[in-house]
Image 1 (cartoon, rainbow, N blue to C red):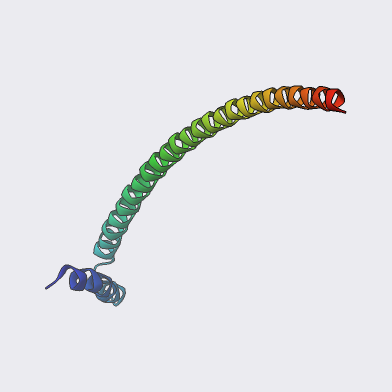
Image 2: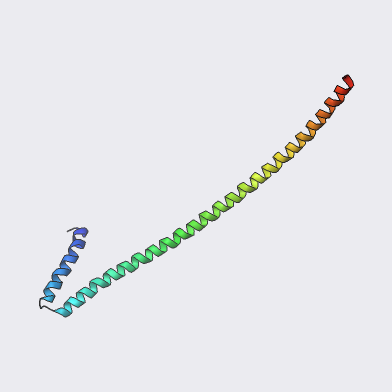
Length: 114
């Protein structure tokens, strides 16, 4: 008999025992059997809940770690962008100065020629 069949037949067996007990058989035995079955169910649920809590704590920890790594990467990227922007601004200022000098020389040459 497979485990699934055994698990599926347990409630039926419990019901059969219950009916026998209600019909006049040993009620004390019925209470003990029911209590034993419910204890197993409660213990199983408690174990499942503990596993869920452990997994949830692990997932929360992993999410926090990943979030921190992403923040660090973002800060690094922002710093790199700022550095590149400063370099671009410096080069543009340098080019503007050169362009103004060229324009000034052109005007001087035009004035001499004209």
